[in-house]
Amino acid sequence: MRDSYEGLAQDIQSSFHAARTLRDAFQRDGSTRAELSEVLATLRQDLAELRQTVHVVEQGGASRFGVSPAELERRKAFVQTSERELSRLEHVLHTGAGASDARPTTSLAWEQEQQQLLLANQDRALNQIGSSLTTLRSQAELIGTEADEHAVMLHDLDTDVDRAQTQLQAAVKRMDRFLVHADARLNGWCVWILIALLFLLLLAVLLL
Image (cartoon, rainbow, N blue to C red; front, side):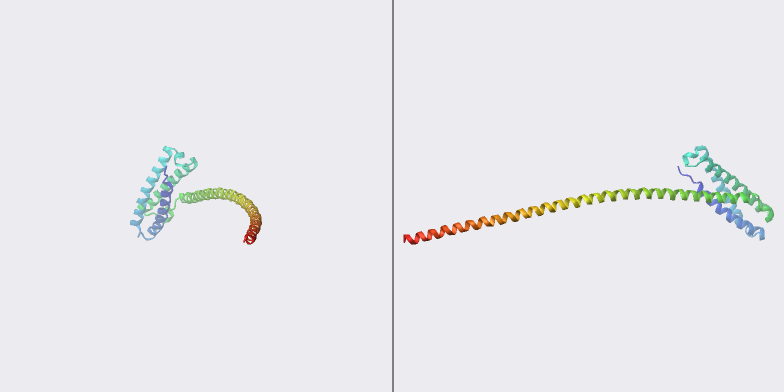
């Protein structure tokens, strides 16, 4: 089944980066209130959808989605940390709190969560690379086996060709000997025919 968590989590991370930038500008001069409010509203909706996604995976059985128990707990922690971060940002927007009040202790947890997501993505990429290498190795072994089989077939073909060539040469030699004998017999018959003709001519002369 399709798991949409990663896409939503990445969108939320991007929105948080934008929200922090807008928050800093808002704390300086209050010029980004509308933009910050819009981003936070979008974040609230995305987090609600993300929480629902995690809930579906938890209720439907994480294994059906290819999610391990540890990964499920990590996702739940990410949702909780993100919601606390969103509450802090909304507090800044509604109260106009200064920068010292707006930096929560959850910022460190948020950064750690980002690092964990990055490491998880790297692990998945490495697993995919490992699977690809295994497939390539299997294909290389198959190609090597086929190459060996073709080499054996070519060797057998060369042997058959050599044998046929030897037999052909022997047949040609036999044919040459036959032609020589045939020529000799033909020459002998010609001599006897000439002798017979001469005898007949001599007999005709005598009779005349």
